[in-house]
Image 1: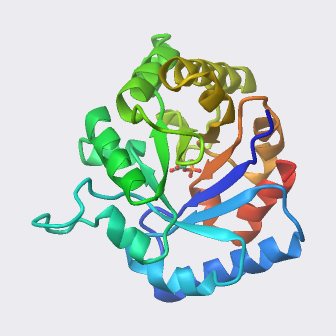
Image 2: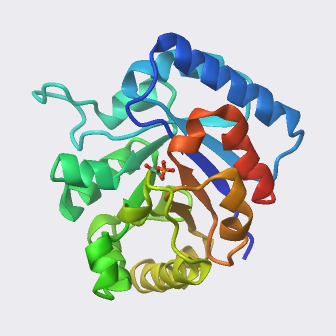
Length: 253
Ligand code: PEP
């Protein structure tokens, strides 16, 4: 089953206007220089940069996404942003349930699922994040934690077009630590199995499962060549266009 790899950049809370536009323009140049890349590119800047980054991406094969959304369409939710507002700005994707949101904002599986349902309703694709903490891994519970997060966070009617899963071990995010390739493949294969139980085998075989956590140009090849790794969600290295695109190149895009 050929799944087109997705190379996604999570800019997190980084970038003022000029930095964001310059980064987006550099990503466009680098991607264009690749000719006909075999993978799909996505950048997810902070909300404040969406409009200007959208302009900078014009004509390029790089999709725009946000890093979170609310589950309601509109209304009395001060400080929040609805899926429809993101779509209105030209986003096609939204990251949901990132471990930093689960930790900083107490986001639960149920909330992530409600947000994903709301995003799908307006036609946004979701990148739903899961992943174990170091204590959970040390306790031998990585697969069990990811299984429960999939069961709780992924909408029951998700399909391979509207949903991408990102496996991001919490302890690997921004730390320079990466699980062994055997550990990554073990979790990805287990996640695909749970997806098959939840959504059916055909959907699970087509659904992309990204790896995230200290992905760099130097480790992209070994991670992205694993059978059940269908791309990467990249934090730190996505803030440098050369590194972001080098990850795709080294990952055989
Ligand atoms: C992330 O936050 O999604 C991430 C994977 O970060 P980093 O690549 O910096 O580990």
